[in-house]
Amino acid sequence: SQELEQSPQSLIVQEGKNLTINCTSSKTLYGLYWYKQKYGEGLIFLMMLQKGGEEKSHEKITAKLDEKKQQSSLHITASQPSHAGIYLCGADITGNQFYFGTGTSLTVIP
Amino acid sequence: GAGVSQSPRYKVAKRGQDVALRCDPISGHVSLFWYQQALGQGPEFLTYFQNEAQLDKSGLPSDRFFAERPEGSVSTLKIQRTQQEDSAVYLCASSYLSGVEELFFGEGSRLTVL
Figure 1 (tube, rainbow over the protein chains, first blue to last red):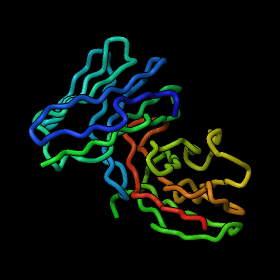
Figure 2 (figure 1 turned 45 degrees about the vertical axis):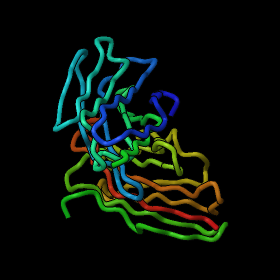
Figure 3 (figure 1 turned 135 degrees about the vertical axis):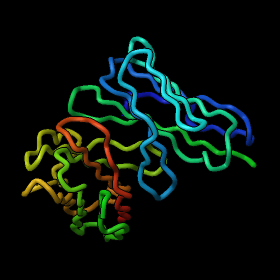
Figure 4 (figure 1 turned 90 degrees about the horizontal axis):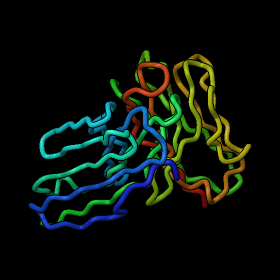
C-alpha cells in the first residue's frame, strides 16, 4: 500500500547488532501495529501503539510512535537469528480500514 | 481451534477455473478482513465485513473477485475465471470489535494459477 512506507526494504545484519526499521505515513494514524511474518506463515502480532509519543517494549524489540502519530520505528537490540523474517507495520488510517506497509525483510547472520 | 483458520492452505488452479477460499474467524469476532499478498509484497486490503455486512470492498481488484459472510461468521472469497496475476497468498484476519482493533490472522491460502 502507498499509504505506509517502510524502510529499509531489506536488511542483513550480523548477530548481536542493533537495527531499526521505520514506518511512515502522510496521514495521522489512529493506531499503529507491528507484525512479523515468516515465509509461508501467517502474521504474528508484535505490538500496537496508539498514543503520540508512545513507546512499548517486548523482550529485545522496542517500538515507538512519534508525537504527530505519522511515523513509527521498530528497534531490535542484540539481534538473533530468531528475529529473522519480514516485519510489517500496519495502521488504521480511515477508521475502519487497515493498511500494511511495504514490509522489511530481515536476515540475521549467525 | 482458538485461532483464525483458513482453507485450503494451498490451491493450484488452471487459468480460467473458479476457486473458493474459506475463512473461519475466531468465534464472536465482529470484524473480518481479507488481504492479498503477492510474493515479496506487503498484504493489500481487499474487503472488510462487520458481521454479515460487507462495509468496504474497495480493494477487490476486479469483478471476478467476490466475498461473502452470510451468517456473520465464516467467510468465503471467490475468484472466478482465475488469471495468473491472481497467484498470491490470501490472508484472512478477524478482530473482536467493530473497525480495527488487534487483528488476528490466519496462516493464509496460497493460490497458484497455472
